[in-house]
Image (cartoon, rainbow, N blue to C red; front, top):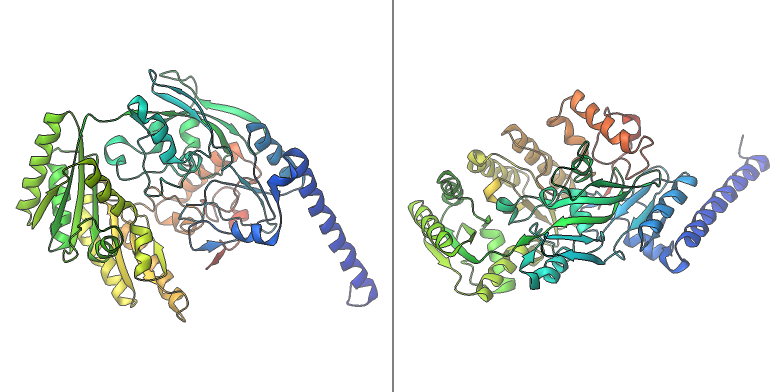
Length: 495
């Protein structure tokens, strides 16, 4: 139909139908929850267009359920109106996993108001929590029982347990204690059809397939966890925190290999280069040596005698590799300040540049020196500043490309450098992500690691939970994976 009166009338009628459909979606969500917890104003929609990554999308409606039943109702309303939906916690994800994408803007279901610790069993060392409970709040709540929640992402003051489950999050102390999947026993979840199920269980060996294990780390593509049973870990009787500084990154990396090679598995083993150390020290004033090429922050815990022996051994290994000094925190306040520096790294670099692009690849420890050398060369070749801070003990690299997005043409250089960093890490025998997830950011790099058959198998598993690809669509799996025709859309806008 052409551009005459008939065509204009048809266009007007179509616009009216769309408006009516959208109004109906909002009204039905408001009836299922409450009007004050369903938001569609431009300001709210703009706030939920992105997470902590550099990607953005477009949301249709934002809703804030407080119960499992409300989550299920929001899912059913979204599906009834032909809308996909995106689960979201605090939005601290760094891979675009909570960015709303699709040809029809999705409903964003935010679980931050589901923030209750439902029960704690100190004897069984289990707590049931809602997904909006903050990671650090959980550890603080169970500390009087001599317990804590071991996974400790750097964003633990603001990230939620639900988000930790979605991304199988790690953290510095996961070197010894394991990532989130090792600390989740069971969960209640709303599936993409709106049904409510329980996955896993508190029995030592729950019957049937490990669907809990499949769900943890699925990045919101298989449903929304609404109650989570987490394993609690006893607080260690003794802790020793060491800070070693080096005149070369190579010496620091060789110390990492030396510690692990000696059969010592610290609770945490972290590295920061000079760029990051300088920014952190300017912020926290913890006494980090700003003239060092690299520092290692090492923590051992356990029984007092074993901790002392391990600390002595680590000190000897570090000095044998050329450490200038090895400082041992003398009290809990000093230890907390050192860790505040490490966990503030991503915020502290704002003193250098206003923007950063962070990667999350994993490489074998034996390849740390070679890969780091190439990563710095990539940044230099693209005329970009780079700092590195990472979980050295398990080879989980966090190269930060520092930049100012207002600079003309800089994003092209940043993205090109990021692509090369990923390729170098994979070529060294590494993986795309250690804890941040694939999301949108690394979706189209999945073929570097997985074969077509691998991706198809993952697609079939996803389809068993979500055959219509309605839950967090266009994430994780690239075109060519099962139902890959849905994946051919661009991943979102780089901002």
